[in-house]
Length: 277
Image 1 (cartoon, helix red, strand yellow):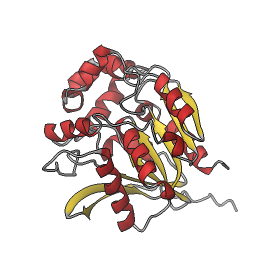
Image 2 (tube, helix red, strand yellow):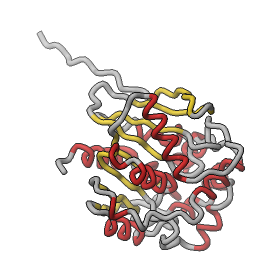
Image 3 (tube, helix red, strand yellow):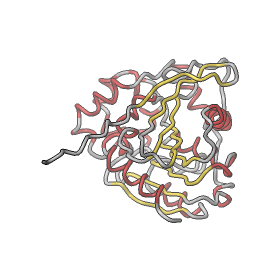
């Protein structure tokens, strides 16, 4: 008698709200039954939890914790501007509430800065660090002026038509011919308030990780898009050279490879997490 193997139900991303310092923080917990490690994910500017769902749910053996930054998605806009150190402290407090200590850390674009700051402040909790499409802050080699002008407007996230029409200029790679994917990505976003977006921009003004990158001793993977108009690949070379155990890999895409190549990117990060170091 042939018995077909039972299909294990795929894990779902569960969204909840935590109380951090008396204020609500919206977070998600994706927890496959087979998960042997936990990944803390810092998302890009203006991007809420849902925008990373395809990437998050592509992990097979890794638990993923992600939260909306202040003023983004379901986390309220604070009264005053904040710095990346505040975001790192918020993440640590959330992990404490979830009884999670050791984590692997992933940060993309703006979130790459927050990930570096977390690794600097809480290095004893970080098992590995993956930095995607990001830079070392103030000393970064900038993208094209045309792209950066479009970057600073909240319309990049609040207007789906603007995003689709300017996809190639903004993100490079293959996004311009993936209109349906870009429309889905844009519709998944819930960016919070314009003030929240500006607070995210102000959080990185003058910030740099240049001075402490060599002090980060955990294994570090730097992923960069080969056609990224926002964060040119040279920034990845700088990060990898400054990190004590950094290595650079190039993805065949633009800035949004986490969106356009979610499975491939998640698989690469997962392999890195479980590699012997």
